[in-house]
Image (tube, rainbow, N blue to C red):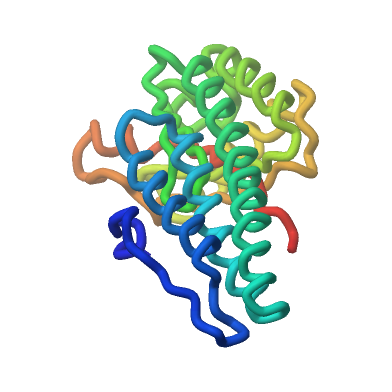
Length: 240
């Protein structure tokens, strides 16, 4: 696929008389899509890049399926239909998630909370304990409550997204008590969002206790980083 994306747009594809071959016109449409996608790596938004990727992948899939079912005519139609469907699907996904990300960044600006996009297309809020909970406690702090209120509004604006809330602790105390504390913190965060109008059915929680540190528990600043809640937001892939 990388070779396809890097290929020159003036490559000539020749149609063969076999039933499953692409016509010259269909192949040119696909190569043109590859050239556009290569250009999208320059001065474009993430939405435009995702749209271009969806279009190219859709064109390839449409061409192969159409060619298998209806020869060269089906391949040509498949390129056009697949490209359109791929572009629409990519745009809808990335636009919603970009809007969600922008809202989350606005809600957490200047708080020490980080908002990142994960490799599996989820948005992640990493919330340190000095923002969210007092040491050894799971009641949502006033500062964290303000952030969650704004965050809840952004979730309401994207009702198809789902939320996973994960609690973590440092290694101080027993493993069993830390597991309970991490679970309680995740549940408190969920309940606060629910009180602000986010449907319970959209949210799931999990506590990891001290089992998933991001820093060294031997140092005070490392323990502070490990006492955290992580919130993941994702838009489920459409059912096929």
